[in-house]
Length: 111
Length: 109
Image 1 (cartoon, each protein chain N blue to C red):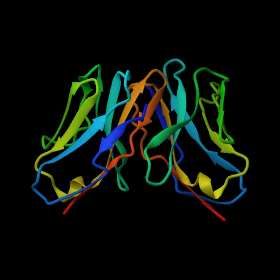
Image 2: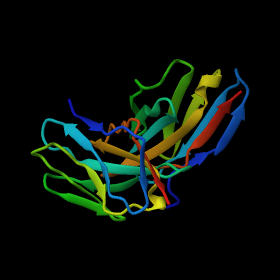
Image 3: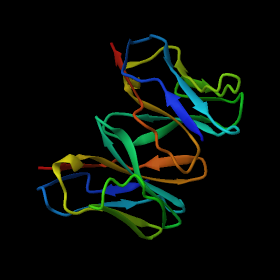
Image 4: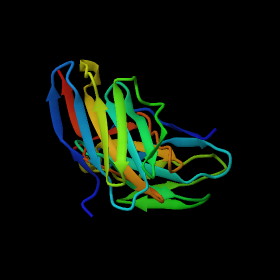
């Protein structure tokens, strides 16, 4: 398996634009997580899914953020409209059993 | 509830120095405990784990022992290398992993 795949690796967008981050988890993993990482706040759990169902979205900062998992092999995190304070590295991770596997992350810059 | 408390960084050491990063937990029962590592520009990856009291996890020269009497899971390495420079995260539980700020380690030649 190629591991957790995130796209794009880098995204630069203008304030107010819609941004969609994508994640392909490892096949067979039943948990999927979205995290945001900044120097100020460290690693924050935004939302996680179990068997494609959102379980806890209490970390989603505001209504501008939404996440979906239409099937077991794909998830998206959408920010609309984006703001400069959303600039961060966003990680997706998938898990089954005892270990979580992380993607390489998407570095988002909102100017 | 269950939680972990990890030593705040940053930690700066010279090559070949001894490393300890403290981690303590509070829990009802004995949760599995993990150390994850994040190298620059990458996502987190599992470094080692222990699933029950007195277990010792080890990997890449790092060790951590699950000690129920002190509710601790401290990370240790006898001789660090420059390549160990990374952020280290201690956590418990499987399906609600929040990690926190981690401890940034910088090893200087």
